[in-house]
Length: 281
Ligand SMILES: [Zn+2]
Image (cartoon, rainbow, N blue to C red; front, top):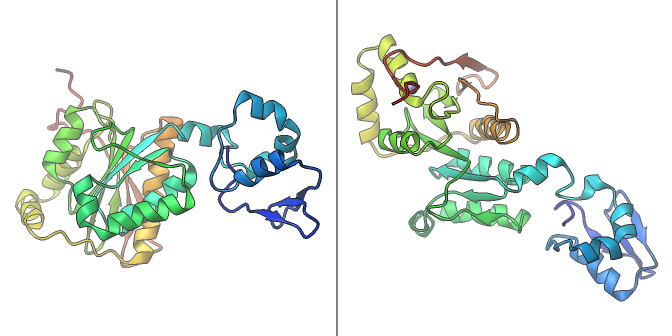
């Protein structure tokens, strides 16, 4: 049990406690133990035992439920969810913050090695933990409910194969000089996969495999302008949260154009007849 990160517990000159600056919920008759309990509701969070709920029932009821971090059924469900992000860039940075704000319980932005090598990965964890101290770092080999995989042009084929073969739900996020593509959310065995997307590219241009192989062989470019990255992160997070909360898979791609930020389009993606991703063994 914890108050939302933006709700302070303040001392008033007469010794009473005030919860929130604008809402002005004032407790002026608390004993020392109750006072300490209310102060702990800010930031650190405290386990609400059965005894606490009985002892502090009046206090709990006085504070509007909207001021508690875990006040909604959605947040309570999200507290048990786990998301892994592959790729350290401005999009995963912004997405991590949105998912943490929404209440996702555990996040990973890379392995211990990534953390050692990438100051940005450490920044992401620090920023998230500063605002949401209760959030957990997902273990390196711990399965996630959704993985976000990023890359220039297309996501890594080996990574995609591993995710498919281990039945891992994932969202590809790819970029090129003209913009960023988000989706489709891939549920292995149900709906289109990233190979379906690749085969559609081949249908449009038979040279696609040659082009994408050259892009994959170059050093990864992660420069995405901040406005596009933030906008993209909102679409990535929405897709992930829709799946976590409503089991709804977005069988399509959001395309956020870099040239005109107002140009955001959704394109449906179908299972490609040559892919075989939905064919049972
Ligand atoms: Zn497929």
